[in-house]
Length: 529
Image 1 (tube, rainbow, N blue to C red):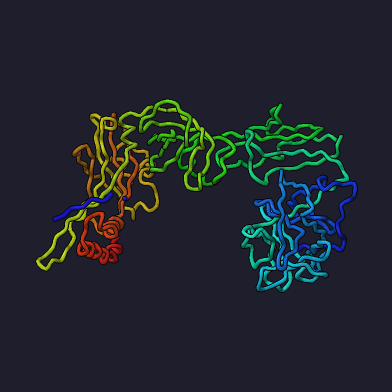
Image 2: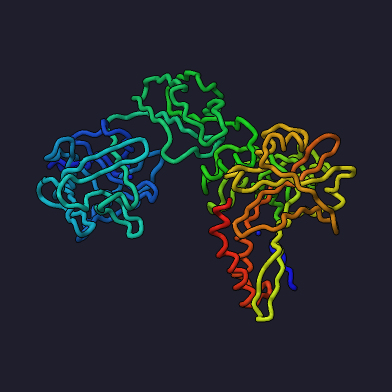
C-alpha cells in the first residue's frame, strides 16, 4: 500500500493655403490641444497628432496613407516644424462636418477594402469628416460610403490611415495659436510634490501681457490622482495656498497641487492603487500597513494581510530589524512593476507598529494543505483508490508557539462560503469565542487538532473529488482569539496534479487511471453539493 502527500476611441478644409509670414519663424508657431468641438471653426489651422508617440500628420502623402513626423509635446503644446502638415478647416458637404485642406487638395477616406487615406481635388462625402471630442478622446470619421473611414494612427508603421473601426492608436487635434497676440500663459499644473500628476491633465489660462489675472484655485481642484488621497493646497514654489484661495498674478506662474494621503492603506487597498497607477508610480507617497513576512538581500520587504494578500517595499531603506509577524507600516510611491508586482518603489521606508508576540506570529503563520489516499490492487492487478483525506497544518516553533494556549481549527465548505474571505467572515461576527462564531454561522464546523512533530494539524476524512474547503487555525490566549490566514483546497485539483505529474509522484499508468476514475464520479458528487 502506498500513501502520497500533495501541497497547492468630420472635418473639412478650405481652399485657403496656409503660408508662414516672412516675419514669423517656424519656431514661433505653436499648436495647442483642442479639448472642445466648440473651439473649432472654418478657417482654423490644425494638426492631427498621436500623443502617446508624439507623432503629427506629416506633409508626405504616400500612395495609400500619410506619413508621421516627430514633435515634442509639452503641456499639451508643440512647436511647428516644416514637416508637420498644416490643415486648414473648410466646410464639409454634409451638416456638421469639416473638410481638411492640405494645400494641394483635401484628405479623404479612399477605400472600403484597404486602410487608405489619400488627397483629392474636391470635397465629397468621403472628404467630409465628423469630429467628436470628449474628455478623454477625439474621433474623426468620414461620412461617405467607403467603409474604411475612421482616422487613426498606426504606431507599428508610423503612419496615419483610415480603418473600419478605432482599432489602432487614437488621435487628437491641435490648433495653431495666434502669434500676433503676445500672451502670458498661466499654467495650473496638476503636479504633486514635484512629480507629474497625469498626462493631459491641467488648466490653461491666457491673458495679454500687462493684464492681471485673479485665479480662483477652487475652480481647478482636480479629483485625487488615485484613491485614498486628498488635495491639501497649492504652491508656486514660494508661497503655499489653501485649495480655495484666490491668487492674483501678473506674470507666468505655475502652481503645483499638494497632495497627501488621507489614510493608511490596507494591503488590499494598496494593491488597488497599484492596479490603478500601473507602471507609472503614484505622484504622492502612501503608507501601507501589514504583517512582516520576509526580506531579501536587496532589502525588499514583503508584508501581507489576514487574507494572504501580499505587498512589497522594493529595496526599502534599511531600518529596524524585523521579525515575522511584526505589524509594520511601509511608506513610499506605489507602482505596479511590469504590471505584475504591486509594490512601494525603490527607497521606501518602514516602521514597526508593534512587535510580534507569539500570538501575532501564530496568526501570521502559513497554513499548508495536502491530500492523502490509499492504493490497493486486486488479483487481476487492477488498482483502486480509497480513504481520501485532506490534511491542513501549521508549523510550530519556539517563536509562534503560545504557551497555555488553546488550539483548534474552523472549517467551511467553499460551496457555503461562496467568494468571500473565510477569515474576514469570521472577524465580521465580532465574536471573542469559538462558540460565538459557531452560533453566528451554522455552516462553520469546529475541528479538533493534533500536534505531532511540531505540526498543528487537522484532517477531513472521506473527501470526494468535488469537495472544496476553507480552513483557519486559531489559538485562544488570555481570552483573546487569534486566527491564522485561511487556506483553501479543492480535492479535484489535487487529484489532477497527481495525474498530470505522475513521474514526480512515482505513479504508474495503472495508478493514474485509478485516479482518473475518481473524476467519473464527479457529476454525481457535484449534484450532491
